[in-house]
Length: 151
Image 1 (cartoon, rainbow, N blue to C red):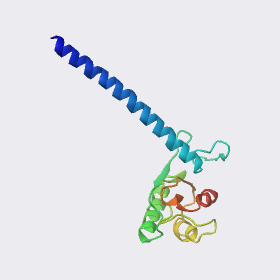
Image 2 (image 1 turned 90 degrees about the vertical axis):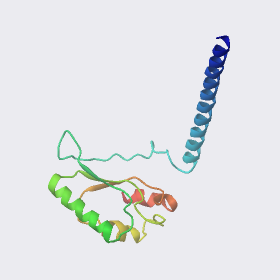
Image 3 (image 1 turned 135 degrees about the horizontal axis):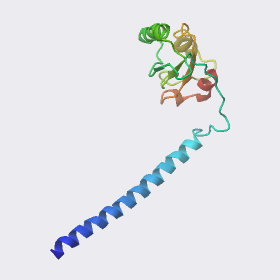
Image 4 (image 1 turned 45 degrees about the horizontal axis):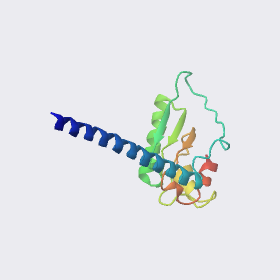
């Protein structure tokens, strides 16, 4: 009986020690990722936030369409854009949320990059709504600020 209690206590304390070590490693790692992100220009929004105005069709909700992995400018992207037009006409849309990878393969090179015209303006010209873009891994490979400035 005494032997079983010692084994249980040993396992109990090993679990406690493991949990403390794990929390310390995860906490330090999370801080390090945040620190690296901040150095790369992420997480620095408080002084750069621009207020936006959305005037929803209904006072109790916002209707929006969310699109992700759209940045090809190909026929499939155009089909999705046409479907968005139909959905917005039928149900109403207040805005469009882009979920990232808006410009394949390497994002925009500059504010004047022709991809903005061919992979966004021409494709979504019939959607007369505000677009709000989240940047994906393909979008941040070159000039991130260009996409932000276009929005």
